[in-house]
Length: 279
Ligand code: C2E
Ligand code: CA
Ligand code: CA
Ligand code: CA
Image (cartoon, rainbow, N blue to C red; front, side, top):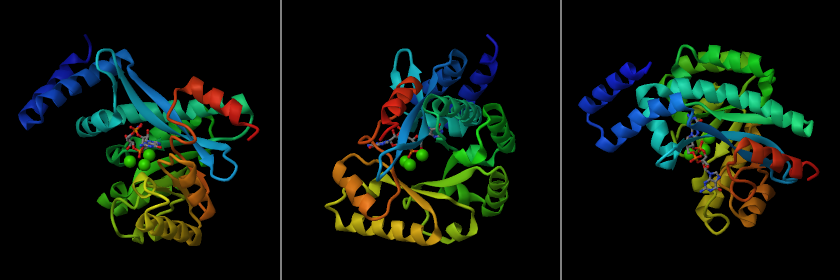
């Protein structure tokens, strides 16, 4: 079949590079999976911490393998990042998510936003801005309702290049979130340098709330910093009412986690939105 030659070439070079045998077969299966359409997008609600109204969704990729079942992104994203398949998968996800959120908006007749993870390699790819333009044009989604999630590491690899890309994104009015905030570089200088709108407070600082004094102090410090820099905060991995209340009382605008909704397929997301709309 078409494309197998390319896949095989990658498999051979991976074998020479020496990653474990298991990942090589997973990598080979990924090329097949792209052709077979085994990759899916799930959507996890991001809700207002006070009203619990759904404000938007984070797009999370899934791989439904016919034999292995759901392969977690923690397994396949790093491989896609290494072999470059992330550019293809990421471009598809960005466009599909922008189109999907327009349907969500139509279902509830109010604006929503969509958050999409952008990997370091995708961010650095020459074609990325073209992909972004295509996603916005095809969907008709206003740029300000697209949130691009990048990590601190992505910005710090080449800050000069990052600055140029971010200003291009800002020109399209797309907003930038720092994903896993607090787990990467300890430097905060980039908050001043780059046009960032949202901090996604990592689950690591949320999971032991409210009992952990250290995590409480970190959350307070992040919320305080965000307030003074006029950034909004989305707390990740909120699983309990106590965590939500703790964060909300300290000025956290939005939360995301199993408490207010797990990642779900698009049709389930529409049902969740419909139920949530008078909240
Ligand atoms: P992330 O961007 O930090 O995504 C949040 C992860 O936390 C998701 O895992 C989500 O399912 C999980 N999560 C959400 N709420 C809770 C909670 O209350 N408790 C717990 N324990 N976990 C929660 P997931 O879907 O397995 O994704 C893992 C990572 O894979 C993501 O971390 C992201 O780095 C990457 N990823 C997923 N989809 C994409 C994608 O489309 N593109 C790229 N580049 N990376 C992706
Ligand atoms: Ca994310
Ligand atoms: Ca995260
Ligand atoms: Ca993470």
